[in-house]
Length: 192
Image (cartoon, rainbow, N blue to C red):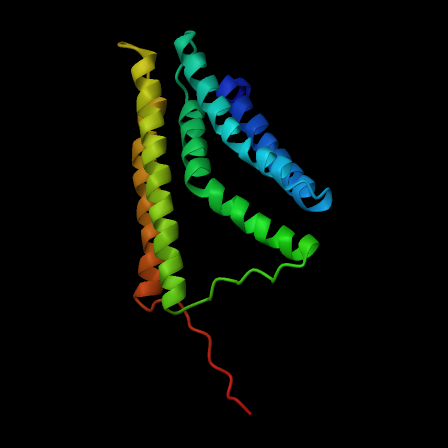
């Protein structure tokens, strides 16, 4: 079973896709700021979307070609959901730091550790997770549908409760933790 998971086309697509994402990200930033070719750099950054499309396509083609629906296909759907929901913010974060380092832009502001701004940040992150989870659930549903009647899809349906657990944990440790005042607050240093 573990060997099947490691050699699954979906698993291989995830690994290759993750490497490709970072190659496009770093390459795009390097071209944009070091080579001073902003349009080409943005084009390379835009190629990160193709990575998600390739991963989803690989998972769908694998199942349509008669491959067993495995947990790797669910993981591929989760990867695509996470990438779609959080990819833009990761690129924006990296771009801000690259602009600061190589183009003299101001240092990106850090998210405060507590307070209203932190709570708002946690709610935005949770909303992104809800989008990621919805995309993952839709992707898993698509693979189940394509697997056809009578196919063994337990490895995929097992992902639905996992998505629920992740959602509950994220909600409790993010928005509730920071909104409800459970997070430790930093003590203000007295001004001299």
